Length: 301
Image 1 (cartoon, rainbow, N blue to C red):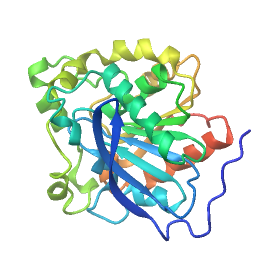
Image 2 (cartoon, helix red, strand yellow; image 1 turned 180 degrees about the vertical axis):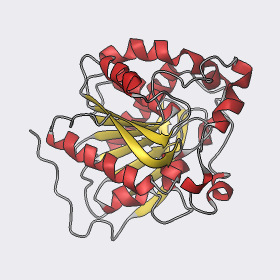
Image 3 (cartoon, helix red, strand yellow; image 1 turned 45 degrees about the vertical axis):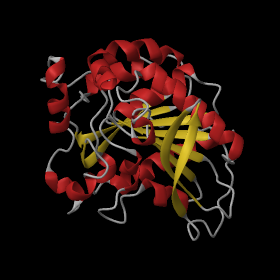
Image 4 (cartoon, rainbow, N blue to C red; image 1 turned 90 degrees about the vertical axis):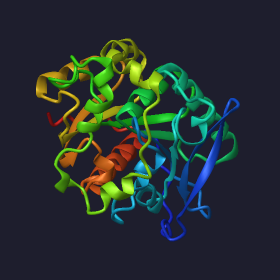
């Protein structure tokens, strides 16, 4: 069992959130970096956004309790929220975007380079949302030489909900936007005005891969070896998250300890809603368990 690096009593007092650029083999990826430069981080949380969003998804400004970056940094972690390939700084160089395998490869290169120039603490922990969860699972399956300690995924399952799976490719964008939010009361006032700065069209090559995810995950899951936790919002409309579907999802991973959780009072975009702090604290608790080498607790559903 590993011993996690103890947090400093002053953790949080000197938290800084700043923009960063990462070198991904000649492609620059933009992002946000949060931490206290005065103390070594306990671990580094890599936050990977979903389709049509940017890294700022994890640093919501509609309410002070939304930001994963300031919350985790205040607890002694370093947080790196990355604009995936095809978003942010790399959008001009990659106007069509990239498929999953290539996104994961560029992200792996960027994280390896970041590790050469920044202290990581006890390694990387990946917290990913929606399409970002697919990239993170690909990263875990194909690039396990990275110091990955665990993976938390929200808004991503393996079976599409009824009415989504049979859509034609031309209707995917509209359908995905319609299923992003759930009841509007789940979000603080001003969320949708402020979220306009976070949203951007999903690149075409990314959208083209959406219908094939169930097959792709079936191929990736056998090679994932680190602890994984899937969280589904109460009002998740994209994915099946009934007991049968969750049991099937866990069963796809023969080598990984996988658990599934349910987040009440939340829609698909959990990290922008009132449930954000609850969700982020739960996932940081999962990180603590990963750092200590504890087995995952039994799934609740």
